[in-house]
Length: 112
Image 1 (cartoon, helix red, strand yellow):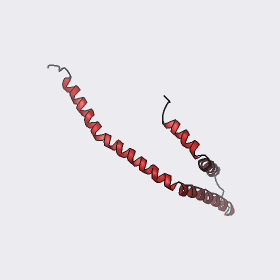
Image 2: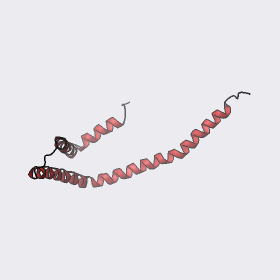
Image 3: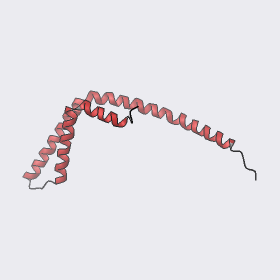
Image 4: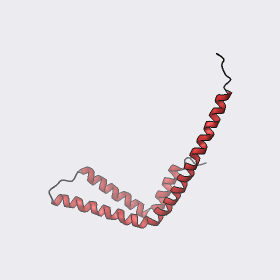
């Protein structure tokens, strides 16, 4: 049995890489375009999302108070999660640019 030089395997690997690139590259562009479109939509809907968040937190406090009236004990974990959501929503309402900068710094990698 004669051993090959590996040229055909190398050519096969290059062709396979190009085929994968041509297949997956459009999906990357489509995902980037979709993310940009979603960002525009979310930016327009930001006031509604904030009102919805505050309303849902108020509903959570109402349910927690109603549970006390109905003689059902609320779990400590539920109280902690409710107050944590209050803190997160308040920070996002009052400091949106600082949070955006913080997230961008963490996701962009090391500075050059």
